[in-house]
Length: 313
Image 1 (cartoon, rainbow, N blue to C red):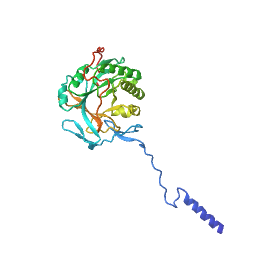
Image 2: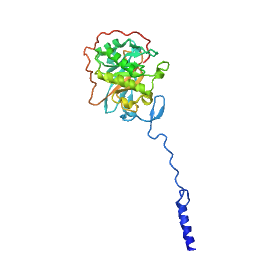
Image 3: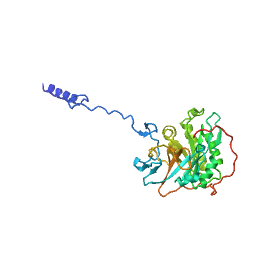
Image 4: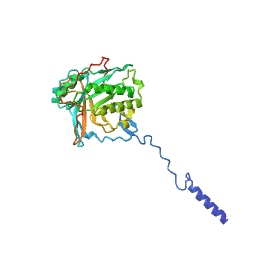
């Protein structure tokens, strides 16, 4: 009888140790996995989305309180880490520009489109028809000047062609701002579907390395969607980053150098809408000229390229 009692007690104790027993109360259910673990929720432009952040990139520390939107559409930076300079980026779409009026309005730098590659299957390159006039006018008015090339490169070979073309166009000019690679998808373009993330990133790398080897500051211009979904930004971390992210404050997730904050700016001396930019310079630094610059602000003559249809960009 005593053995049976001991056996019964041991059996009851074992049952109490079972996970589903009622002796110690109900066990806690297992936690539901977080579907967004390791991701960040960010502004893509037209919407917000969860993304996995790129590895090895410095993050931006800007907050909404760091910026003020003025009544005239200019955004000012109120923080203490950077000095900022107001700039514009222009092409033939802005038409004739009174560059002295632009300078008098407080604009300190200009990014000028030097050329582009066409949308079609042939992808011919051409000089922006206002490039030389804009360069000479901006330099004469005392602005710091850089350039950008509107790319439709399919990969590294065409990107190298574009870099050589740009270097030929800008030879002799006083370039103190970056030389930028500006690839953008064009919905109706025959070439667009042929470019994947690897081809796009490789294009930017080749272009920037050739620009750097020539003594200029290489730059990649992009906007939120391309930056977050298409470019491998971790491979472009050594280059100046120019972000198109229009708004009242700069909410781009990664650290960058130039912020394009408006596509519809109004600046004295320009009759059309113009893109507005802020350059961020860490306190105590300033833009430095390229070693190939000539102080005269004029360029050696070069032959004009064959005309081709002019894309927007």
